[in-house]
Amino acid sequence: MKIAFISDIHGNAIALEAVLEDIKKQGIDKIYVLGDICYRGPEPKRSLDLVRSLHTEVIKGNADEWVVRGVREGEVADKVLGLMNHERQWIVEQLEPSDIDYLESLPAQLNISIEDVEISAFHATPTSLFDIVLPNADDNQIETVLMQAQEAQVYVYAHIHKPYIRYLNGKVIMNIGSVGLPFDGLAKASYGLVEIEDGHLKTSIRRVGYELERVVKLYHELNYPNAEMMSNVIRTARI
Image 1 (cartoon, rainbow, N blue to C red):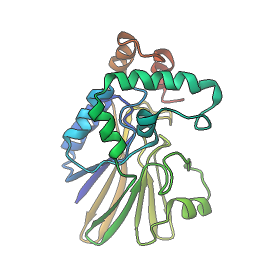
Image 2 (image 1 turned 135 degrees about the vertical axis):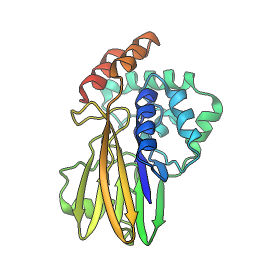
Image 3 (image 1 turned 120 degrees about the vertical axis):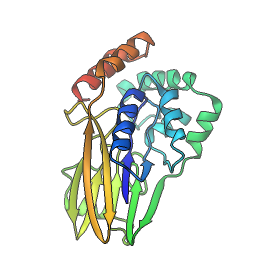
Image 4 (image 1 turned 45 degrees about the vertical axis):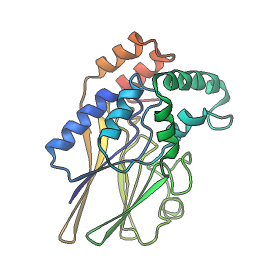
């Protein structure tokens, strides 16, 4: 069984298409989506339509929550709150009311059982869409914050846009990075693979190149409110 976990598309449908093409070539049996589908990209509607066309389980991320109800004070720095809500309003204007309803209805986590392997998947942590657990977090934070489903052997999350794989107490912790907005300095889309066969387990991160400048061009052509900064993030994979 080969499972792909994708997340943090952030309205970058061009990157998503490249990832889905790579997934097809890998012979993947199942795809799961861990949130942050529309916000901060030039093609929110097309990104959401592509995700929904997969007919698979999807969970909510913090950016999906922002699309539904706006960015609130205390969730981001005060100096960018107005700009981020301006961006959010632009995103909402590209979507249908039914799209907003879909995002609002998404569950917060997944518990997956395959061939006696239990996988706990969530966007940021099992109890929060917003909390941050970085790759260099100490073992105690990883264990207490991320590994709450004690029966799981694999923990998969997203949110931080910095993919990694760690092992702790005989279990796997994987961050799958971001399809549309990686922050780790490698300007290639990121997603995670979990392969299970006859009791064997393999985890890996795939990085997929795509046409960055096409995305940059769309930000400007469509008059995205924060086009210059977001273009720079696309090109440098740094925030």
